[in-house]
Amino acid sequence: MDPSPDDRTEIRDFLASRRAKITPEQAGLPTSGRRRVPGLRREEVAVLAGVSTEWYTRLEKGHIAGVSEDVLAAVAQALHLDDDERTYLFDLARAARPARRTPSRRKDIPVPPAVQWLLDSVTLSSAFVRNGRQDIVATNSLGRALHSPVFDSSTTDGRRRPNIARYIFLDPGAHDFFVDFDGAATATAALLRAEVGREPDDRALRDLIGELSTLSPDFRTLWAAHDVRIRHDGVKRLRHPEVGDLELTYQSLDLPMSDRRAVHDLTLYTAEPGSTSEDRLKLLASLAATHAQAAEATDQLN
Image 1: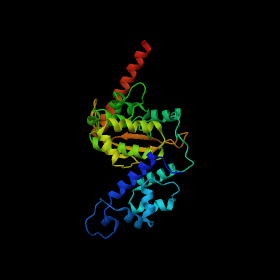
Image 2: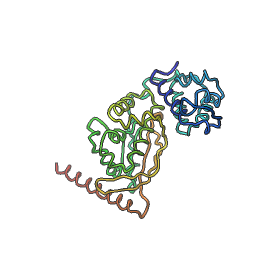
Image 3: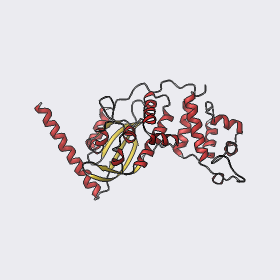
């Protein structure tokens, strides 16, 4: 069973985009004369992978079902794929196997109470859980306060969970909140690309990508690059409306759930001890606690 036309397009564009990034010099191949295409030719990739040109051409057209892992590994090596890109290629091959069920994800997985207890126990860091579609599905008090622009955005309404991708690409305020907006946008598009490899038949994911592609030129450009990112950590600079500029270290950890195919991660933001950002993060935590107490008092009066 071959992949669907959409899946074949995904495979074709990904392989072609990776091939275009590698020069013959990088691949250790001789160069001579003018080249009509950027990067490597199909026949050059075939030689490097130890397969025929006809076979590789068929693969790049999206016919990936039944391809052995050894051959995929050889193609990945020939194209200089990094670990995330290699995982993505293998995910595309796995999705093309006949045993795949459609749709692969019927419903969202509820966050267990124990996970919320874990989040609430974290008091010095912002902590939240998101799924592969970049929906924020659970958070602690400081996580909610830190990401208040996302929660308060017009892209979040009563029918939708806060969604980081939708906020970044559809809310103009994201350009102010994320100091390095281009970096945040690039990483988010690459994370969604990885999720497409894992769950190509997730209708909600496809709908989100369609919405972003229709409404955001920035997203269309980044999506066409076919970059992939699975691990997400580093330093994030945010300009918060209540406490100002923050420079935070963030780390995302895999969070196993009852449905082990559904990808969730726990993301924590913390500040360097003794830094101005730590002082401001503590101030934000205090403000969040004050707001929560005021809301509780109002509820009791009502």
